[in-house]
Length: 81
Image (cartoon, rainbow, N blue to C red; front, side, top):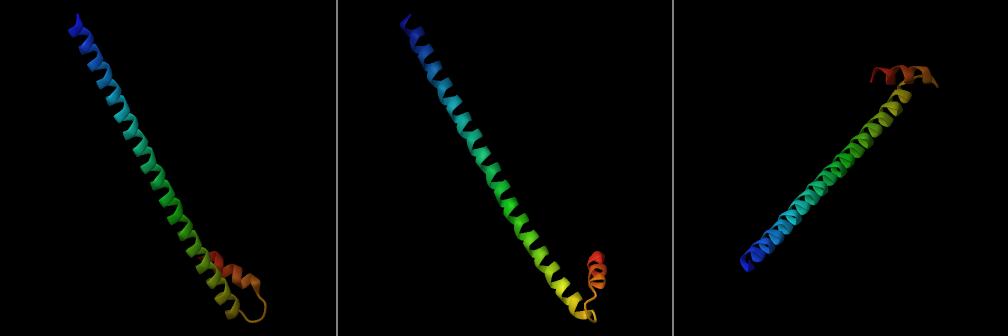
């Protein structure tokens, strides 16, 4: 009987170790996913900033190319982009 109790304890502790390692793996996968999402958000933010910068430059160039204050021409050029 003492052998049975020892085997039961071994199974219990092994199960606890397996469960703990699964929790660690799941936690690290979630951290990786969150890191990927943060990276994608940063890249997207940088991309949107670049697009906005180019759009501002295009607006300035279009405005300077217009004679006088013809904002309708600027809007027409921007609608083509």
